[in-house]
Image (cartoon, rainbow over all chains, first blue to last red; front, side):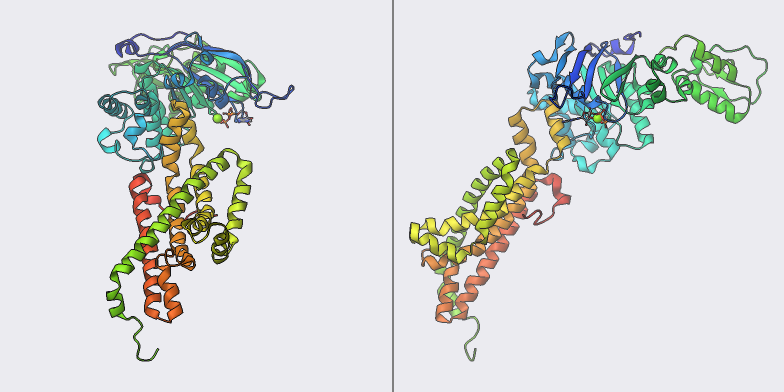
Length: 343
Length: 226
Ligand SMILES: Nc1ncnc2c1ncn2[C@@H]1O[C@H](COP(=O)(O)OP(=O)(O)OP(=O)(O)O)[C@@H](O)[C@H]1O
Ligand SMILES: [Mg+2]
């Protein structure tokens, strides 16, 4: 796993994340001795500036794990280190104000305007009202909401997708090094969800926060995660690693089933035409053309539907670079893991 | 009914001063009762919210009190506290509980769990969360309870007229008109106390609009009684 902190992250100044580590974290709700834990001996490390996705079936302890980071729930055993410091040694309100939190049901304050919702943590931290206002406007713009139109509205005057954006803006308000996001895009339709995901990934390229992201949707996990922690019933860590590794080498029957029979296809969605070794070509006529950013999965689908053996890979300038074939796409899965899409 | 008009406007004209005094007294007695009733109800509700198991008990007592006929309660209290303001106010205060406590509890219950989670996650202290999130969001149902309590109390103040002419507000005229078989007085007392109740109700609606601009579209009058 390489952390690509070059380029954009650097340009955005010293923004960026904190490292996060779970060490043998266990949570038992029932105090009984033999009682099963909601989370069991969870250990993993998230390097600063990366997105780690907790994924698993309903009830496997994702939310519980997340809430132990900002101490909404205290672990029964083990410790969670934020930049090397145990979160339990830190004053709870100060800790929470340094951690952005996007909850499963958005949880905007219905009695506050959008502007004041976004400014909650800056307000608690005692920023001047001028600075709060400037920050609010900046953030609303960042998540794609025109401040002039939205600032003075109430949450019940927004669509579900707009509310999710406000939830993200609110979590970002005090520029926290760590963001906890609990199924932040679950409550919207698939098209809006995809757009929110794309926008968030674009944003993250500039902000380079450390993000712990919860979902029960394996496709979302593959798309959003630099690292994926697959959890299974009983709050156990089934596998931890980059998406391509988990898809290529599921460590157990459970993981293999969870990522799906089509895991090969899913791996193709992690690669683009630009990653592909192309073949020399003669005179291409009427073949489909692919920009470098086209995902191999989409390219394959297009080739199969178009019923041709190949298509044309274009370079950044839109000039033909070579021939893309179904065979080449298939064999790309045996190559080394690709550079992270977009990272 | 023969000859005599239903309302003797000349009597009304001659008694404008005393009528207004009675109106003021009526309002005064009601305001005291609702204020004290609200303070105590808030305390009871706070206990009920924190100790859920006590809530049925609180409701039971409030309901039991409510079933005592007002006339009997006033009369009984005379034995203990004479013809004093205490005797006049205690029943009025007691009767507000059944209207206020459930609405206050429902108000705080109505604050969505995800909003509370978000507040905790953002780093509100317990006090900040209560003042800035829970209380404002409880306001619509709390005010709904206050509306009911105000209207009901304004009606009951008339009954305290049985304690003598220092009490009862407009109820004094109803009682006196009844004894003298003088419909004008009964109507003045009755209609003005209804007008007062309606005005109080509208006043609270207005207050609620001002306090909860965010809920403007979702106001439902008289929600969640009992
Ligand atoms: N307050 C609680 N008391 C007792 N058990 C709880 C409590 N909260 C959660 N649990 C249990 O702990 C387990 C993990 O719950 P958690 O909310 O972390 O699951 P999740 O992975 O987030 O599920 P979902 O995808 O449905 O949100 C579940 O079995 C749940 O029933
Ligand atoms: Mg959950």
